[in-house]
Image (tube, helix red, strand yellow):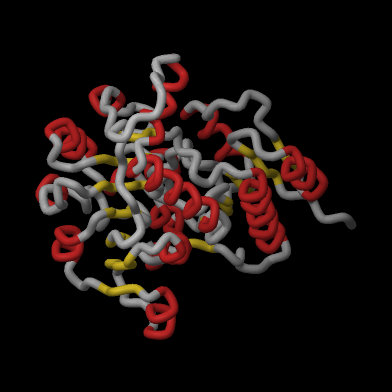
Length: 328
């Protein structure tokens, strides 16, 4: 007798190749309209599916999990971050959670360097001059930026992304410093030529560039708060391709407006799409719409990990990328 196929609900449009393979393997309900599901749609999905495949846009908190059906046994997240999912409550209800770690590290590191260069070399300002037709020709003092070679880069969070950033920054001649929950193995640290700082305050006060590469957890919320931002040198810049909640966005905006911080390159924001309007008005800020991991290759690899997690679960085994509360 043929085994009944798992019922899977996908909350957003995924790459076509991923959707096709998922349809071949499971009983899948795909999302035709590429917009986030409403709360009611999420509840309906969680009440009728064995597996939910959400994205970062889907906030799956304790109140939503309380309305989940008895069938739901796996939340196979499309993405590495799981701060939008109440993993502890899911575990208490017997629902496994998996993610897609390590896939977007190189892509995110590329974008970190792009933002670092765009911010220090004033690339958006140059683009605006050209697009407005107001360029009057080369001038010795026009749009002067700063050389990044020789500058000190302080990486906050030295996981896969942080280490990928470090490798790239070294190639640009930057000096690598980092703060992390745990110090790297001596061989890894030596390979990156990185200096470890146990005190985040001490590191922040001495860096020319701060790169945020840590996840959002209760312990990292507003890790870069107003007090810590004030430790930064006035000529320093900050880049964030991780999670917006790590920085106090209002405090950062105030300091950028008053020149207490020289610039910022931001791909993520504290309140998602609701970006501080004063931040949008500043010339010393480069803003991107959460696109650090947005490569065709990365999205396909994410999809492959989701498929592997679901297939392994369907075969009666623990998903290879299962997330447990102790990991957060």
